[in-house]
Image 1: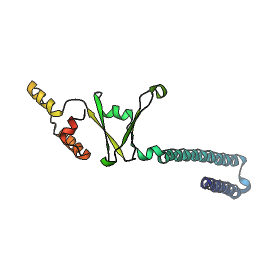
Image 2: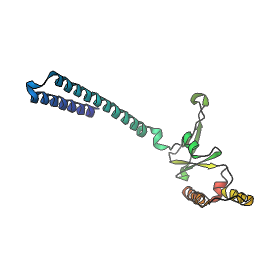
Image 3: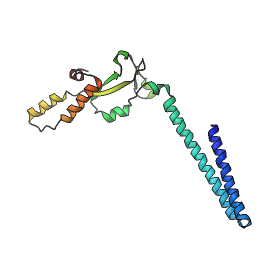
Image 4: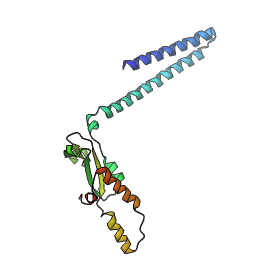
Length: 184
């Protein structure tokens, strides 16, 4: 905090010096109106400096909350809005996987809706190992949908991109193909 005070003192000293320089330079010819205008300019700069200092304190407080919060250090969060925006309404399955399977020890907490107004589910890895949440739809596997559409004679879209994404997810999560369909 003293660093900000020092910079404020230096800045004010500079402004006073500049004000005195202009008044001295102009000497007796400086009119009272010009002097008042210079004082008003200095006061405006002081007010703007106070606003900047408040903004700096606000930014430091936000950064402090982010980095100093002990909860934010260990756990990843998936917000309800994130789930709603990324998943269709039929998505019911959430798979939570730890980066280190041998250290997985999860605790599930559900808040009382009377206090928060909604059900909040918190899944914590007691060992502090980073974990990830993955959402899956409760719809039948893609291959079943393709066969049904072919039997009905409907036009089938190219699903190779979806299959590549699914294969990449399998590799990332070290899952077999049957794990994705037997998670329910």
